Image 1 (cartoon, rainbow, N blue to C red):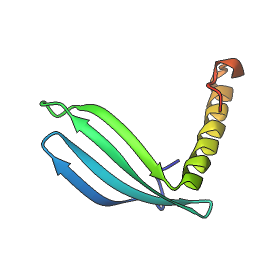
Image 2 (cartoon, rainbow, N blue to C red; image 1 turned 90 degrees about the horizontal axis):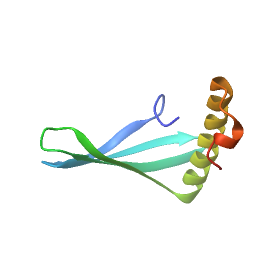
Image 3 (cartoon, rainbow, N blue to C red; image 1 turned 60 degrees about the horizontal axis):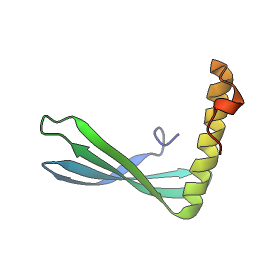
Length: 87
């Protein structure tokens, strides 16, 4: 959904324990801007991962698209709708 054509990392900030990666993408005419906040353990493994997106209309769009994708995936795997988290 977020990756693929039009997705681009546009900024990067790092230190010994983590990184913040800024990204942009346009979906359905709405320009998303966000960051991946990543924390690393001493051996280099990811121990924390958070994604933040703005503006609000982009969050609402992603919420709708993720709900639709969950419904498609549940139909493929046969998961009952009652087992799919509410939108």
